[in-house]
Every structure is written in C-alpha cells, then in structure tokens.
Length: 200
Image (tube, rainbow, N blue to C red; front, side):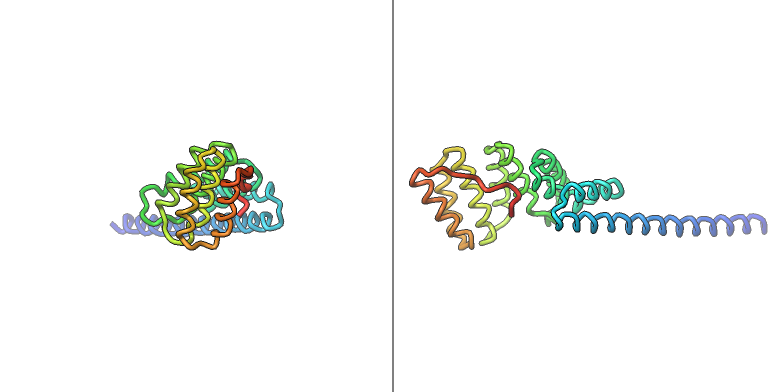
C-alpha cells in the first residue's frame, strides 16, 4: 500500500510539474505573439505594410483564432489594395461573430464593403453598407450613409443615392458637408469619383 501511495505522489508531482511547464510555455508563446503584434503595429505606423503583414502572419500562425489579428491584417491588406485578402479576413470575423450579440469588431462589415467597392462589386457593397446601418444607429453612421450614397451613384442609381443622402443628413453627422457636396454633384451631373477604400 505504501508503494502505491508513493507512486501516486510521484505521478501527482510529475503532473503538477508538467502543468507548470505547459503554463510557462503558453506564457512564452503569448509573449512572442504579443511582440509580433507590436512589431507589426510599429511597421504599419512607419508605412512598411509588407513587413507589418509578415508579422501579422507569424502572429496568426501562433494564435490562429485571434480575431483582433485578423482585423488588423485585414486593414493592412485593404490599405495596399489586396481587397480579396481583406474581404477574406473580415468575412472570417463576421462569420465567427455572427451569433454574438455584442460585436467586438462592429466595423468589419464596413471594411468588407470597402473591399467590395475596391473590386467594383458595388451591389454586394451596398448590401454590406445596409447591414452595417441595421447594426448601429445615430450620428456615427453618417459616414456609412455617405458611402452607401456614393456607391449607389457609382451604379447610376441617383434616386437611391439621393434618398441615402437625405437619410444620412438626418443623422446630424459631421459628414453632412460631404453628403451635401455629393448631392450637388449628382444633381448637376458631375462625375462621381469614389473614395479610396480603406483611406479612413
């Protein structure tokens, strides 16, 4: 019986040591991943988007379920015009947050729409902008109303563009001046030049 107790004690000690080692390895991995993310953010601020993307890719290889990394990488892809890759990252975020009441990344739809505009897929972008508007309310949506109106105008749906502008102006957003300018361009038949996706 004494031998059995000693064996059990040894197994318990080894188990605890293994758990401690596993915890230490997890902490070291987390530290390395966080360092990669910081490095990616620093590269992005310097304008070195390629290096930032490489660091985000390395961080994702260590923490493949981290939506915050996908979000940042999606923004970087969008800024360099890799719209399909950006759309893929934002689609993954939207899919994983679909059942969540409180979204950690509520702008993922807006950015997916921007990628679609960049690819010239205006109808799909419109659906995303409309979904983004259903998701929130208030003056903060002025930008989304503007982008929706602009996209309608690019499709030569001036009636829908003017309606979106009217609804956007009703929010009292600081985007009102831009919306009024867009309305003037539509009414006077001026060419509509879309904003650069991921520019703000």
